[in-house]
Image (cartoon, rainbow over all chains, first blue to last red):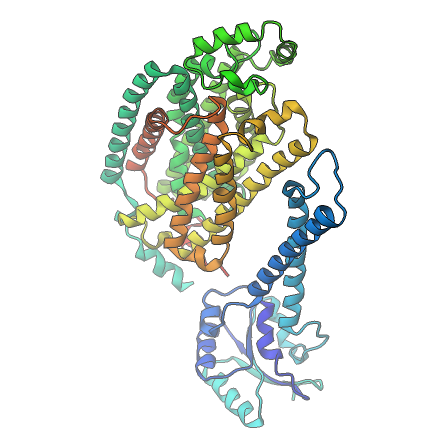
Length: 192
Length: 440
């Protein structure tokens, strides 16, 4: 889920301001997410205590790019480790151990496997960090007292308006979607 | 959620009641099986030894399907899985075909002197496997021939004496009586378990008693232990003992991994076929196939892991009595073609082709992949058994009739159960979770 925060976090301006709307039920949230998406708003995210079915579709989320990074890392790990072993054991310093051919493929498999998996794992984790804009020590979302309940029983949509004009437009839109409570948050502490 | 009840109403009772169709399937299977039995009788007259090995191959294949199905059902109960409820019944049906093995094991018990050569057989022929140093009389015409030669050839052979000593040390386990008793015990346990799991689950269709689910979850833990033990020892007895001097501690895991992959592939293929005939409807949808595909992929990798673990240790250690297994199958033998096919077709190609989420959610691709892996599983069982029959024999009609007999009778029993069973456990309290299941 954390990847979604990227949508809200990518356009970090000097002064980050947020419009946070609370919804009473997951159904209301999904309906509202559809409207926000259709309104063409770019920097926004949805926060729920548990995975809500149909939300990805309502938000129009595209499949993550992370898999591509992981796959490339796996290929690099595979080719790199094969090349390394073949060069070291087969060419640069061939050493016969236990009567085995120095460049035997059977002996390479565990190392090639480990290097590929390790590189893929690290790339996936740190790729996720990069995509999500982590590490990030503070976010205006946490200025809201209501937002603490997001891990319990509350459903939110947060929008990061780019202009003052958009801020008003977004607030009205969220209100029309049936938000039970709307807050304006900024990076400089406190509810505006 | 509202979406769940919508989906529930999409599936009609007709779509879950195969009834006459399943009965028709059962009769076709029994006809094929009957033809297979006839063919097998002829095959036994033509070449008793070859037929015995072919029969073991077919029997091991059917057992692996039963074991895979038992494993699938037990592990879903144990892990209280919600997603799999709508596909569990089909697995229960495959598991409930296990009583067929009670009949199918009998020919194996009769044919065992043709296949296994243990201490006390006194020149009753070596299986070619035992003869890495005497590769000349492989491809024997008949057991009698081979045994006559074996007796002469090894009369004063110190290797032979060593071989006999090894067999003597294992004789308390590897003997005809022990083999027979154990085989009956394994098969009886699986037959009971398969029928028990289906019956209990079917009772829940009517009484909707949620306590049944809790009870099955509690029971599945000890049952899985007995399952694991019987599977491992069956693999030792039936496949590893083909070469009694050879052993591999991971062999049971290896056999299990193939069986677990096969049942996921079979569930994909069989539910897709059922859908094609208008059954199941939306009860099994792309979300379930995605998960079945993931597990099939995972167990395919696990099979490779087990297979390679065994190969690498033996290759590195290079101890003669361990290497015999690969000496039969690896470079320089005719069977190396099949070994390479398994590396490429049971692992490398499907690993690359089935990795993507897109492919697993595209049912045409997933169906082809699952069907291919089933073929590879058959090849894997063939690879386990047939190199011990002879240095090289191409696939023959003898294999085919054995396969028809065993699979025909087994699938016939599955069809008979299916004719009086709903295709989805409608009384399971987790059913709505499974119907509304989505991959996130």
